[in-house]
Image 1 (cartoon, one colour):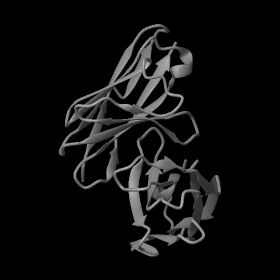
Image 2 (cartoon, chains in turn orange, cyan):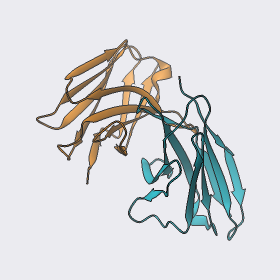
Image 3 (cartoon, helix red, strand yellow):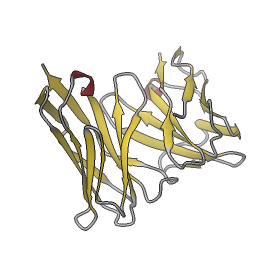
Amino acid sequence: GENVEQHPSTLSVQEGDSAVIKCTYSDSASNYFPWYKQELGKGPQLIIDIRSNVGEKKDQRIAVTLNKTAKHFSLHITETQPEDSAVYFCAASIRRDDKIIFGKGTRLHILP
Amino acid sequence: GAVVSQHPSRVICKSGTSVKIECRSLDFQATTMFWYRQFPKQSLMLMATSNEGSKATYEQGVEKDKFLINHASLTLSTLTVTSAHPEDSSFYICSAMGSTDTQYFGPGTRLTVL
C-alpha cells in the first residue's frame, strides 16, 4: 500500500522567512496530494491540494510543487506569520474520493 | 465552506463502558465518511470508510466488533467504541465527503477511558 514520508518533523523559522516541508510517496498510482494544517486540539484543515497533472499550484502565501517522476511533493509558505504555527500534514490518495494516507506531520514554529 | 461537526468534543468514561461519537455534515450531503484515530503527537490513522446505507470498510488491524460504525443517513455517521479500555483513549476525527470529492474534517472527539 501507499506510504508517505514527511520531513522535517519539526521546523522553526523566523517570522517573515519562508518554510518548506517535503514529502515523498511510494505508490506511483497516487494522483491527489492534499496538505492539511492542524492546530492544537482541532481537526485538520485543508489548505491546498494538487493533482498529478499539475506541477505547481499557488494560493497567496502557500504553494505546492509536485515531481511525479521522483514521487515527491513540497509545501512552501512564504512571509511566515505567527498564525502559521501549527502541525502540517501532507497526504496522498489515488483519487480525491479515495482514502487518504497521511505523512507523520511537521510541527512548524514561527519565531518572533 | 463545508462544515462537519462532531459530538461530543470530549468524553470521559469508565473502562468497560461503550461510547458513541456522532459526525454530522451540516450543510452538505456526505456520501462517504471516514473515521480516523490520532494518538498524541502522531499522525492520523484511518480506521474505516463508511458509505451511506452500506457496511463500513475497516482498515487492517481495526476490530469491527469493537468499533461499530453506522452511516444511516447522508448527514450522520456514528462511531461506537464498545467495551472501551484505557488503550482506546485517543483523539477520534471524522471526515465527510460530498459531491465535490473533497474531504472535510470534523473538530475531533477526545476520548479518555479511565
